[in-house]
Image (cartoon, rainbow, N blue to C red; front, top):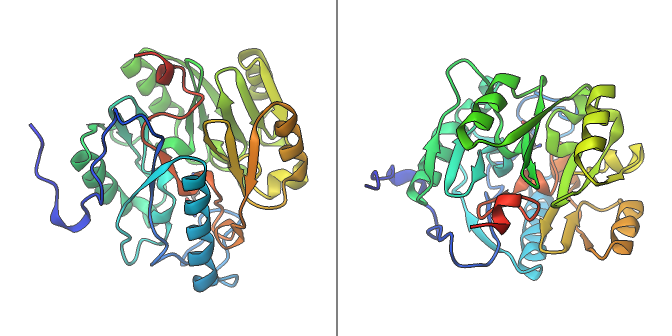
Length: 294
Ligand code: ARG
């Protein structure tokens, strides 16, 4: 039975998993701003330009529409400036949503809104065990049948183990060692089963080795483009959408048959996020093996 959703944040469109078109959850930046500092990108002295942030968000949204995706909207909430980063709402596996439990108190207020939206959209909700932090698709990404899971700076490794047991999938934990790359989606992006991009400097020796062993085609991003959030890409079919300033990556992907699109996202980089962080794929990332099997 569907529980009745709280009235404050109902989905604008109901999630229908079988429609066949890519579906992405976004949250308009009405209340976005740099109100606190929970990662090294953020400084209250480098405030985001609100008007420009709105333009950039709209342009990302239309770029995703052009790539063939449909966007669904989470209603923005005053006092929750990072709610725009819907990648951190939950991790999606088929019709299951594993909710985030944020490490920082500043973001914990988002949890109830994420839960309400995902519940009313029809997802089966799962919680990570009490006392363990987990930051959703920001730190847990499928490439083929394997879940790649970033831990230490935000998510705890225990949460990833719980998810592996829950969905009977292989989990490769990757320790994140550079505070600028505090979520896995800032330094690793699966593009298709067996294909991913990554920034080696964000991982330790073990992590780099684990990635090389587990991903057939691992495409390296250099430090300059990693800083432009090249790895924080949204993949829709064979289209890859990133922030501006990632020409080397675009070139490398173009040679492999991907179509790359760029759209300026500097106002969100000020909060430590870019294209991928601003989206949550509801029907399964292109690279997720389970998406291609029923
Ligand atoms: N200011 C946000 C934070 O530090 C940015 C989140 C970016 N999201 C992401 N999936 N990497 O939590």
